[in-house]
Length: 387
Image 1: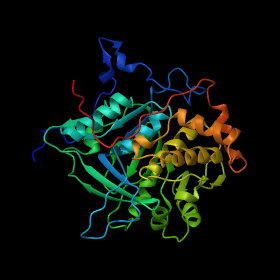
Image 2 (image 1 turned 90 degrees about the vertical axis):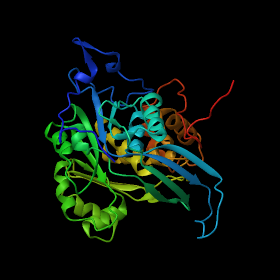
Image 3 (image 1 turned 135 degrees about the horizontal axis):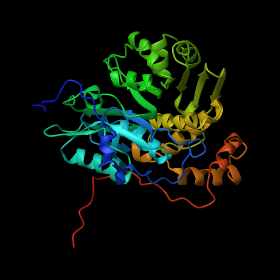
């Protein structure tokens, strides 16, 4: 497959993408939001972009409701199915639905899957794709996820993008924060963002060998917040419990958060001296795809807003718990309407009010008016309506 002839590294003028004849283009207006969690801290001269995230976007097909994985040579019919943008789109959509001004840098194919992901992210979810690229003749990566017994198994097909993220991005625009999936390959854009003063959040890109090279620990020097799951954290730190893993990783990064699935999460903040551990919420899971990304988005909101460590974990925990009640990763992420409904049902008159009373701080964030629901994943790319 041939790729376009482009320089090895292109320094992109992101300001020019939103300027014309010295005037701001309409795209530069503050994006639509239901609730702005950073309204109390926004000041003149702050970066316009809250979060810049970069990585690979997949077209996800998720099957749910199977009692067990099908045996070889058999066929099983899944009661539920959802389609949505996946990969880094999970994180981007989750952050945008929580009110952060979000830019996403990713490669998109020129096929139907790429059209769907691009249109969903930019049109439906209001994510700025100025730093993303469409590539002719490159087909979009596709992932099939099967959710069974509160976990999921994924099969992916795809090819390397015609350009690396460093080639696509160059130097990122001024931002409050960025999110990266750390890999062993060079990621100059992360260092550019770090040196420019952005708060860098990161998790691990999947290592097919599960060797988790010690070189990855060196990459944490360019990060402020590290969010691995328990298995990743223990493998990377060569420890045997999430608690030991968090303590070991805290020597390499200011804030480490280790997620434990249904058991919640724990965190250490070396900057403030805080430690916190939060249990999982009593919510029935339909599909765990993307829950870790939604958790990370919630933790990012709390960090940028300046909340204490325990409340950051609780809010992230709630966002992830709400997401697993729906199909898919990105479009399962909750908006403030879903958070408001959960709060009023559970904190004020729910059956678990005593158990989750620590979530009362969320009430101070919620508006007095009713908020509508977000869009959810559908079983198809779209239905053709005939006259």
